[in-house]
Image 1: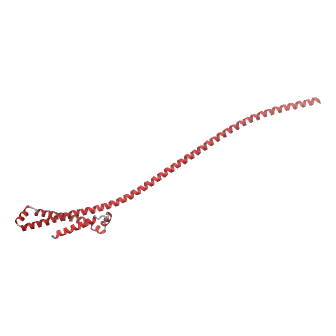
Image 2 (image 1 turned 135 degrees about the vertical axis):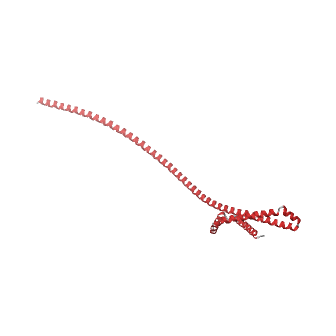
Length: 236
């Protein structure tokens, strides 16, 4: 195996190991997100896109080179030469095996590289989504608590309003009773005043009659006195 294909093979093994580590179930997406936010990755982030694109291009070139080698050693001309010379037959099959091996290595390396990038992206998205979900849950809980508080306040206000209405109606009933009582007392007072005026008028008429009778009696008394004085004078 040449140096480049040895590097690609070790790169494939590293990709397999990294993807297996990323797929460990008990490591949460938030933990991976915190790992991806280390300072070392932030320092390397300006070069990440260039390195990723370069690696993809290298793997693509090696993949198409392996495809070319497979087509080269699986064509009809090498097989015809292999049928003529047995040693060439073994050499052609060895080259075909190496080309197929290189094809699988480069193909799986490219595939796992894309898978690893996608997994890292999804882990970051899941971590951000979980944080946003936690924030939304907190906001929803606070909104629910505020709604419950407003509902309780509305119930208290409604109950206070009903109590005020009851107390107001009770006060109105009491005031109505007092007004009716005062109206009755006023009516009785008016009747008593009317009766008093009637009695006063009767007493005035009676007093007037007594005064007239007194005057008449006084006149008769004067007459009697005059008669008595006249008779005394005659007797003398």
